[in-house]
Length: 495
Image (cartoon, rainbow, N blue to C red; front, side):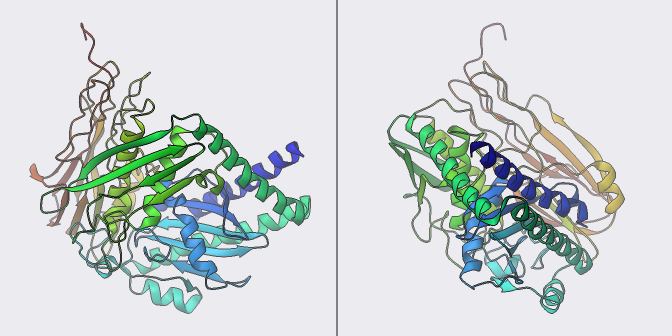
């Protein structure tokens, strides 16, 4: 039985992986096709995640809320549901989720679309104050051709949007066929029983790992840098008791007038990521790994915002800070790395003809036994960089420089990873939106290690704040210098 369970588990994970491959290879936009800013997973009839591809952490941990939102509408076998509403199963508006039925449950895809309408090209404005400014809000809705046409007509570059959504649909057709084939090979009852056991197996492994952590209550806090100045505090208390963990965000700042607000689904996702990193990172990826983790946050606070709060940056930036806070809290009980860049360095360029979005990697914090890696997408992101060839072929942009930001990692017994320098020259008039963090407060070192360098944004050599929007003319150069990771341990003499 153990061998059969492993075979069925591997088959289910391969379905999720193949869904991702179909989506990526069929997509039109560089953000999905090249950067792979998308995620895929399979769920059982009860709406529990049983298999996921190793894609984007912030997507995957929040997917169960999307399935729960769709299940409330009693989907039929042939229904396709679409949603992006952060307060009804989504994360932020550019992440469009499709949910369909399989013979044994549900298939889910989530992809970051390069534009979903709203006030600014790319739908990731730096200064939004209400959700509707950020794009088309889609509650759980049955998708047909007429609905698809109506939705994409409200977005920029509708042909590209339609192409990316059809790529998601192709992944769902693949999932239905592969689950049918697996049931024909193994028997539906045995596959369904294996789904239950895979969920339970992941839960047992994570519980066993939690039981090895010291019991106690551990607290930490950190701050975000909202547009216009000031700071917003994220505070968390982690309680480890036996084989369960409770994470409480009491004391966190209230939701604010900008867009660093987080729906609770994104907050949970960040919590699950940290617990998985610190307990059993190799556990088979299923919802069972999340079951021992309980997340509490006051209604209306920064990490459990209520509508109509703007949330564009919450998904990408606040989620990263939650990770930093939780690692710091757990650091009172176990050894954790120094802080990484703590931001996704969101860069959006566009006009009525094109929209382009990317995140930029940076330095990861050093750990007790090794230097931090340089130039990587860390924490809640897991994307690639758009190759210069693909970027210049598809968009009126030219890559002037893409290199490591040498010396930006914090010094220590082990060195923090270096950030990245990314320079893009625009070849036609367009609008720029920058959303980044760690421009004022540096990523901190650990155990005596020095902090990494904070990030910088520049246009034609003029420094901009971490969150900025401006019009660009042909020939203008955007430069993003991303933060370095913190060092670990004091600098040793002679170094």
